[in-house]
Image (cartoon, rainbow, N blue to C red):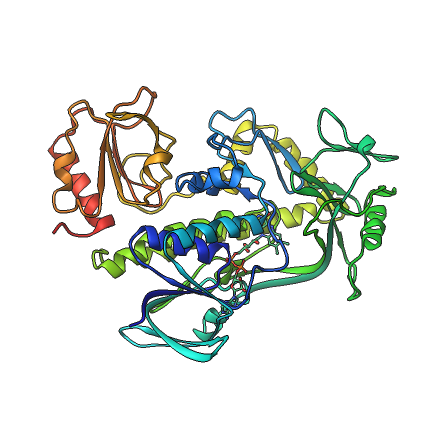
Length: 512
Ligand SMILES: Cc1cc2nc3c(=O)[nH]c(=O)nc-3n(C[C@H](O)[C@H](O)[C@H](O)COP(=O)(O)OP(=O)(O)OC[C@H]3O[C@@H](n4cnc5c(N)ncnc54)[C@H](O)[C@@H]3O)c2cc1C
């Protein structure tokens, strides 16, 4: 056995998994067929609960460049309809405008710090497995070779060769009726509203920033990111052609969609600058996420429209879900079936993204029936509960894993706790950077420590106090910061101790 885990693909999800495995004491090998970074930048930002998840690994600060913790966004957009999130009590929608290339750089830096071996220029070409391990065939710079590993993870993108080599189907739909054109541009300063940051298009009117804007002829987006201003236009029932994309082609598309000319110049600064035409799109979900010792991760397991930017919210949280479970399997303490919960927990999350991206794609399409549907939706969105429902769905905050327990937090992401410990006041995010299971005991007598006997090698204990209202008195957190057990009792009785021991056993295996 050369390795415990080999990962195909040093995209964001493969790198995230590599970091999670390393934190859990497993050193993976990452194979990446490209010699350097991908030329094209795809995502321009992270949206949803993934921002909190990255904060809980100390990665938010590196990506945001500031010391402040993440704050929810006051506004977002669903199917090109504005969502006023400022009126929600518990707004779950976080956002971080960061180019995917930067995210990949930060994750690679972190993976290397943690001792991950990344082999660039090494392409997976074949796979076979037996009861004890997986043999991967690789084409490397010095020729072909074979690696034997206990587990193999395909994080090799939507066209995943891992998925194909395992014979896992990828059912879904391919739509070829839309063309999307986007580019970095320079917009004349006098067109930018100094108060809203929006764009005043001569002859058309104001268009808010970062909001999809639908007209009878298509969809227009003006996104002034700190790294450059993007204009993106989507049209339907049009042939994109195969000539190289140009700014003039974008100008023509803007004119068709808005009905007027938008003056803009080529982008300034060193770049890299986007100039892209995308035709159609796929919505597909792998038939299964696991084939014996091989697992699929991120786009290899699911692809969907990029509307609303849900891809990395889904994929990076897949990686955080899988990492500790795979490590537990390798360390030998995983309870039976733990690895299978990767799929039972993450498939519903993927299905929800498929559902809401398809719903949004329907809501941005042209046609009078769609306009009518949007009018109805806009009325519904005036209701705060509807806005909250949609915000929870898009952010992934409505996911509840099927974990046994009666406390309302069970199976949900941990709330943002601020704890008074013997060494001072700490945010939960400062305690979870190590990705270790954590029992947080806030009971007045710190009564729960004994429950960890036989599992102290696997589970850390924090005894603390808090002045926050409405929190449980004890929480057992998995490494992915989901609640495995919680209690509201100030003095937990024997029954609660038993429930805690049961939760410990089902998440972190038998005591030893
Ligand atoms: C236009 C566009 C805009 C998007 N915008 C957003 C957004 O704003 N927000 C968001 O969250 N998401 C967005 N997404 C989605 C996001 O980019 C993807 O979900 C994300 O890239 C998936 O990451 P991944 O690591 O699973 O796969 P990938 O990023 O595809 O990485 C897979 C890696 O595997 C490597 N590889 C492939 N085959 C092999 C092989 N045989 N051997 C070794 N290596 C191999 C590839 O070279 C690649 O580096 C967007 C996508 C697109 C297309």
